[in-house]
Length: 504
Image (cartoon, rainbow, N blue to C red; front, side):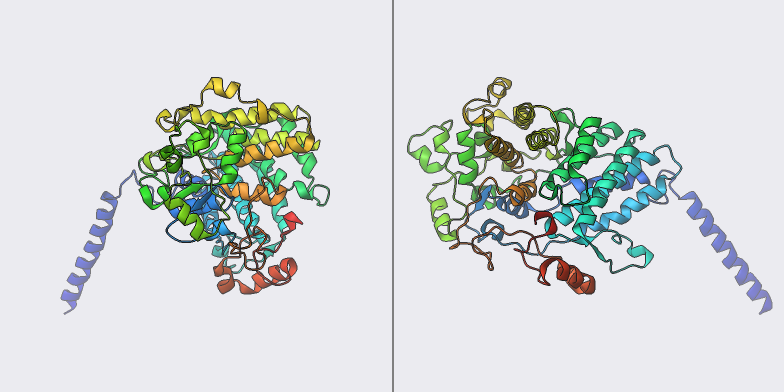
């Protein structure tokens, strides 16, 4: 028995040794044993820039700022001023962000990764606080350290932190190196990232315009300083975003009648485009079928009929069945790639500079900023298949001659501001519609149609909601901190008409 035990033990040890050798031989040297900073960088950028919802969510987002209405399938709450719970799902990226920096420490790319980390955090927290008000910030994303229930920071402190992180991102990218794994249009160029960071900082500061002089954040001075340093986007091609492809296809591609044929242009959008003689109308929509039956041509702007999106659902639906309204352009369902997803753009930057100039925050001619921003907004349409332009093609000549009539810069300051705000509104159609909703909350322009008879805003039938509700997950798992935040902001009620610090 003694000898048998020795033999068995020897066989066992040989087996372990063989397994170790087998594992050693079969380890792929090209497969990293731990996730690299490059892989995490890709995940973080995609987490910010990639559209992650489905086609119906895409339409719903565009219905909130009154770009479109939706017929046939059922009432879309966002069209009729109903907002539910948001989520904090983007906070899950915070762990990847921290690991990305950790794995890069000591490398020559560390500053580039740190720059992206600071920018990503600022972007994530901006989107969250704009929806609800106070959010977890200081203690967010440290569940791995044992903190499962983060406290909520005051919105003012969240914005202060966002702007400080953007300043740090600028400094890191200033000394950063070109890196790989960047799925955005910047291809790992730290200089382009730096410009996007500063452009985004201007957007954040303009979002705070109603608090200028009422906060410890030096809104006007910080804005002017960024402009003076001049590390900003330089052309239309400098946008932060993603190009769609055969794997990441356009959200409405191949939806056919399910969504595209039921999505109607709003009269708010159509009427403003017509006033400006803006050819984007022909790229955004299709002529109303009843108008074509009445012998109008597809290049006739009067053939494009918008819907009053506050119209009761039954009446809207009946009009749609009769072909009374323009549906969105068929290119949205036919083109697998479509126009890129553009989240931080030169066009918006210049329009923000125009508003800042009118407010006296910076020097420079507001007219020049307005015209440059509008030209940049029109330029991407030169790349769209002209088969979808209905005979009204946006060319460079058209852009050069755009500023006549209603598009010419006014002489009255209030009218000038409205022109700037309207161009920002038109810019975000099918791109970043929540930003248009945020701008409406701030300046109440353009005037959204409201109909108490159709409104689903139960507590204020004559108002557009001021915010989303907090995530249900917070009610379930972070209730104590949520209640504290509600008490100090909204008299203890989580309700869509409550006004956050930013807007008071």
